[in-house]
Amino acid sequence: MRQRIGSPMLMWTMYGLVLILRIVTISWAAVKLPDPVASSFGASGAATGWSSRSAYLAFDIGVSALMVLGMPMLSRLANGSGAGVNIPNRDYWFRPENRAMLRRLMTGDLVFIACATGLLLTWVTVSVVIANQQAVPAMGSWSMLVVGAFVVVVVGRTVWMKVSRYAVPMGASAGR
Image (cartoon, rainbow, N blue to C red; front, side):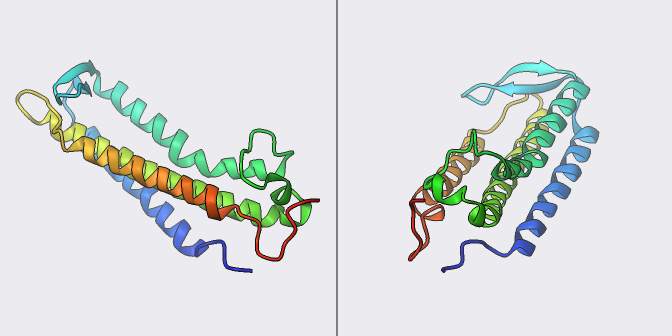
């Protein structure tokens, strides 16, 4: 059977680094952001909405906790009936003998998405701080390139997962 998972040590190391980066970035933003904060920006980059510094930071912390901390916990769905889990070859992966591998695969995929999301959220936080340090708060149009790159990476990973990651291994029977 070909190897289906990356190095767990590398995966969890990257995850830990992203968590540390989020904590450092949010702490830095707490010191650097003015009150009120330009917290919403239109397509032109101009500020379109404002919030208090504490409200912005609470939102940033909440989204980070939900996405970066919560995402890997979803792999626990592999332990249950499989309701709400939409993967290719579902009957194969939810067999009792394949559940351990399914959980490792799902954990790896969810940690990858959590890391990518954490990096995107870090970029957004840094961009908001930089935008708010200008006389007229505005976000550069280049910020959308980072969002586009995030979308390309996540869609690419999702296509790979659909086509290859959850394929039935060579020599295994897909049916029950």
